[in-house]
Image (tube, rainbow, N blue to C red; front, side, top):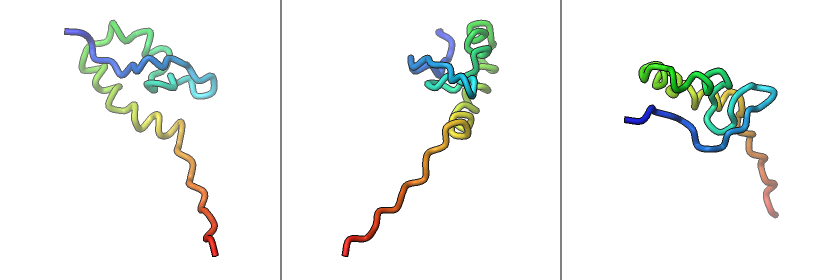
Length: 68
């Protein structure tokens, strides 16, 4: 059985946040991934959506003016 992975093949480490822009893992997490136990991988993966949302918040939509 292959190891669980959040990788979406968009592997770009953001120099500001240190996170992979595709999956949200740190460089250290990516490097250690194969050696981690499955429960640890699952624990990290569970937190990635919140980590990405905090690092890259969606911009607020700009209201469009009403047409008269």
